[in-house]
Image (tube, rainbow, N blue to C red; front, side):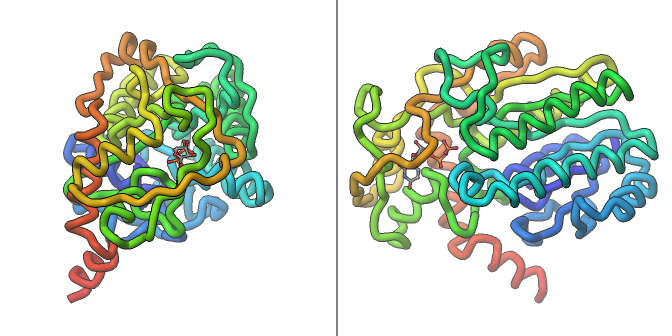
Length: 333
Ligand code: UDP
């Protein structure tokens, strides 16, 4: 298939692009490179540098490349930041998302895989969380993703735009080429590994008084390759129907302390910690029921064990001590 990936130079986007290219799909990455990395661009994919608000460029890109499906991953995705700066999230996630849907109308592109989030559920009523559970986002990030999901429902109804909305839990890990690097970094696993590498003094544990077995928050970590493969499977339903799927491994999840312990075992390094206050907006436990995507798409996570996920992230960090900068310098030589 000919596929446009918005945000394909980002962390998850680059791994999805790897999977698409290796699966023989003609892939065009559309990325502003504001947060994405040129060095993350996968060989074999074409890059168009552009903003989602540039409807003319989007339209041209869709038409000239005869795009058949879009995977929309370009967005802002930090809970805390979204509370501080809702305007940014409504602009970059909602207004820009609608601009993409507009651009898809004219050339008749009617297939979309959308990166959504577990943050649409807010403080969950029960664990594991099922897709039919109530959506009640507690921050603008979840709210803006849910706004696009709602728009998609009506675009499907009126224009037969078929979509798969994938509600991500905690993506982690790396491939040989593609890994996680954000500036500033806010995600637990890269932060813990930076501390192991001596690039950060310590890890601040955001609260140890949660109602969990060790007092720290429990999350459902999913390897980025398993996550990426779900996008390819989701493309397969879009000729017939739309659907919403959770994307986590399910199971028991892992606490912040367990992540740190596992990282100590993987790296053999000291990882100093400090107990700090809770971070605003963090639910105690977020665990997906991934029954629906397993049953309907045959999706199976292959790297559920936290140790395996952290090992892959550690390997990538060691081979890319400066993130993507080195790769860029190499490719400029
Ligand atoms: N966390 C932490 N210290 C950090 C970063 C994160 O204790 O420096 C905790 C955070 O409170 C949450 C878990 O680790 O309970 C995972 O956070 P992350 O930001 O990686 O993902 P989120 O669950 O917010 O999407």
